Image (cartoon, rainbow, N blue to C red; front, side, top):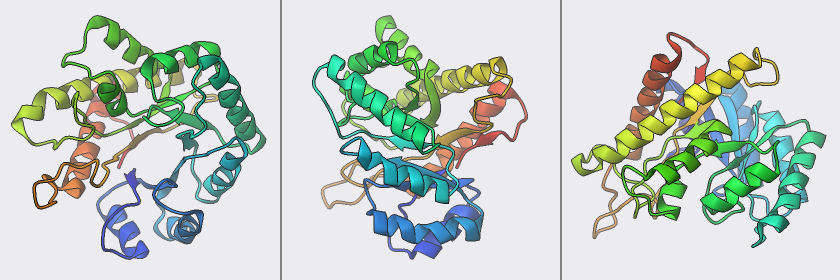
Length: 279
């Protein structure tokens, strides 16, 4: 699945380009699009046959509801939540998480909380406490944010790796961005970044294996039948640029590379299977 963010192209061209490249779906990011702009994308999901994905940034409990209803219209299997209601104390976060889960249940649309900075899951350690306090809380794993959040070395020490393993165990989807300890999004082909690419690939492998084991334990009941891997590469200031403002790598080419890696890792974990929805 790819983000709805192809520059200088019409909406129809964006969808067509994503479909022709072999991606399985397209994700709407309500942090980058208004609800009106997102509504304009709805017919293109039907036209192209691309699966829908949606990321919401609710600033209150009720602000999540319109995103959940939009998700139904594009056939999204769940909504990724980057919650903008951010109490300081974990004890105050718990009722907010539980309230969002209740709204999701009312709208019959599952939600996953993305591991993301500048939101309720901003801090790795606080998120681990939330997972203990709210057993029904599921995650969308974008581990790039926690690499920067904790300024992790490569490889991370055992204690931090154990924390990330717990995150991966509670994650039902995964996002394909590679970070280094001081940069949220690094070019994938630079030789100096190879160690970080290998680290993230190992985490995706661990997460895919945990997802598959859960599905088998549940005999596919109450579990999505397809694993979703989102190729999420943001524009500047996420993407590194030179002194003239030019990006140091091509994000479209890298999105295709991430999709290939995800499929290769899945094949090694599960064998030949078509149950992975990757971009």
